[in-house]
Image (tube, rainbow, N blue to C red; front, side, top):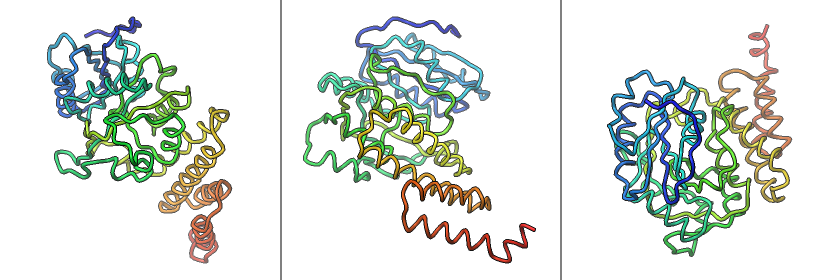
Length: 330
């Protein structure tokens, strides 16, 4: 097993497929099968085992295009960075070990970037509840804000101006790492290893704001997102932690890219941040952390006053002042 950490020169036309994994032996086998089955032949597969204890290494076949690296458990961002440092490809693709690609995924995305000159390409997807119940056959169709940008566009690969992509992503995250192929030359940053919730959103947002570049997308359904018991954000019982992660990301974007944000984008991001603070307040109130919940509602109100925030704050204040509440606190 190779554990070196040297950088490698870029190989033209090569796609480096980076698969971070932690204790997903069975799902990894399926993800690896679909990566190996890609019709795009010029690829290397880099698996970074993030300290698995389930015998992950026993599920990886001997294959000259596969390289395996193991590290102490440090999270998916660290694993992806490790993979990036080993990658030799002109293009980078990050496949989460619980997701699946159609055989045409890499070839279509590389062609989409070459056709449009885009910095990265992303594809439509289906959503499946593991092991096989289809929840959505066309994720794009369920995102009205995205459809508004694509209406009347019939090209196989559609070019989105950078500002349009920024607007869409600020309003609501609509891209996930498994659905994107990047030009390596366009990535000026690594994954932030200090962010443990929403690190994928932050990485993509930083890609969008780091430089002015077009983005390519296709309505073709080329990959599958799988819901299952170990999905973090979809099954994490600590919803307040998820909201705090969203707040951290949006606040950082407002601070780090203030000069790149248009007035409309800043207003949209403030509205989105207000919604995250409101969600945090709701989750904190639900579990009984009322003082913290009030602070979250106040932050939401300061960013965007609205009747929903006012009502939630007023309701919580009344609860705090009630005799029953005072008896409990005493």
